[in-house]
Length: 139
Image 1 (cartoon, helix red, strand yellow):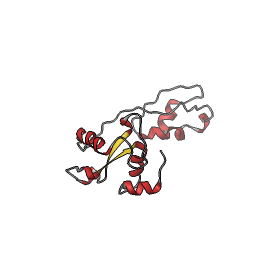
Image 2: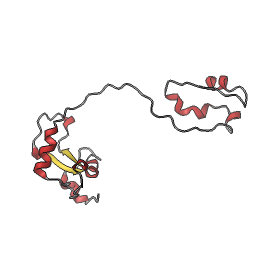
Image 3: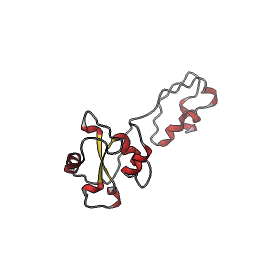
Image 4: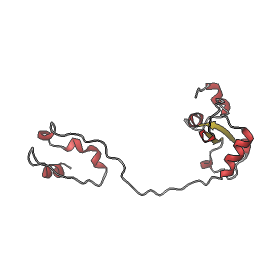
């Protein structure tokens, strides 16, 4: 990195374009020669690069959400928040799907607002609705 910067910046008035194709770009300011550091202007953060990711996804059945909202109602079972739109409600699996459950039973579900759902998953294993009610979270 020092060679790349040094070759591009040979004099104080020099300008250069640098293309770095790995994670070392995050530390580029530490490689700028001392004589140029006062003139170095950090021009923002580099975001939006694309990378290919291979992942596996657990399949969900949209009818589970519909039936859970129909059975349990349109309010958070923990903080009793009643949203104006039901998209603010999540259906929480009391036994996480990633642990291998193949069938979902309605007594294994809870309707939670987004805040309570994140709170439930803030520790492992996820909190039960009863445990969350004891914390009395205010959404």
